[in-house]
Image (cartoon, rainbow, N blue to C red):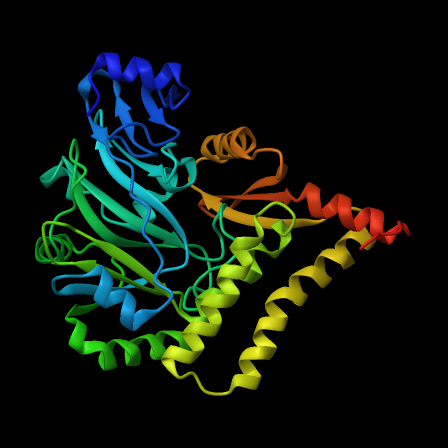
Length: 368
């Protein structure tokens, strides 16, 4: 970890900032800096360093990719379509950090509904790396097909405070079982020669509409790689089509190429159906945007999520507005009590696509 001088350099360079949440303050790393990854949180008084979760590269060619990336056996786990959090105990409180290093008001509020937090009584320095997924989340447009309402939590890695290294696959599985923690599906430990079994599992995941898999080398290198099914590639296109004018073209071309490669390498049947699904991934969202522009004068997607505390719902809206950037606007909606929980509704507005379609529908001439 950085010494005090290194921390001052990081802050002076705009790579790290001091932020507050719920009465305590911490340094959040907005970008990678020297040996500290983006999303790292350094809590005051030396209470804890929670290292940022590293980016995982995406394999597009499965057979050659696995052989090139891994020099030892590896674990295969399901990649769940949701958002990444790290859950830990700091200053006697259990909190969830987003991928970017913010304390997540939504996940922190709902932790008691999503898992048994008593694990931190026995393991106070444990850090749970998890995915929160479901149709009622405040960040993602898409959700796994097997979650019909609200959200669920899936642990996929474990580490310790003040260390960037993950626990081994065997250690992780033992702790998950001991404390009954919800987790992603683990398909076991494989070698390169097990490719036919791996392909069969990926075809099954694709048929069920699931996002993909993550491969984790069982060695000191802790190397990782992820692989999207055809269904995962299509979901990525559909959920980001409203950001068509803000994302680089490579985002979408990479997904289309990944789809073609997955279909070829996994030997997916019904190519005509796959072509129809690709067209729908693009057109359904864009046609919805056109209808909304004509009807409402703006392109927006509505989000709904549940909270135990209305204050945390308000804090989420404040955080979303602060971090939205120029390509997204957050418009708060209703906040009302629904049984024992509070229901928050809000909209995300996409100004770039909104402005473009507004001009085109008003009759503007476009020169190609």
